[in-house]
Length: 199
Image (cartoon, rainbow, N blue to C red; front, side, top):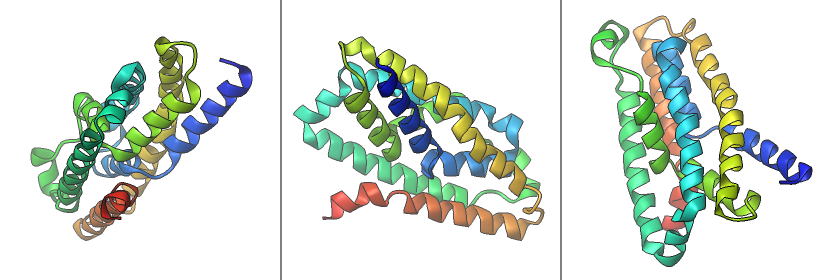
């Protein structure tokens, strides 16, 4: 990988990782509801799970979608349905007094698995593989490594923002409003996926 290509990949990884999307909105909500320590497995699951996703997409999964376009459509429908369900869960999160007993942040494996139904993650992975890999299928490994290293501090900014919001969300009413706003933003983040399906 040339120096210019490396810089381009780092810039793409940072911008695509730090801008709003399902992962960032969910990790911010997790920080606000559960704090940093309990949300660390969620953050690690996002970064490492996405790195694995890039490797698997680069090793041939992208070709499956080229051969079977309906598979991509089916995945889009599944992703939208799952994210709508998650938005409902966030909007109706338990109040603070019940949260300790009932609610839990995403685990490492749940966050890693979530990448496979995250429309933004698919777009990022396919773009990274298309633009930044050359020289054989295993050239995707350094791309995945760079993305993982850049992604973790990027999403951690959202986690810290969520933690800072805990100081404001000191009443059940405020927390309820925050969770419903996060749910609405999560639904709004689906528009890039829904627009092609509706056109």
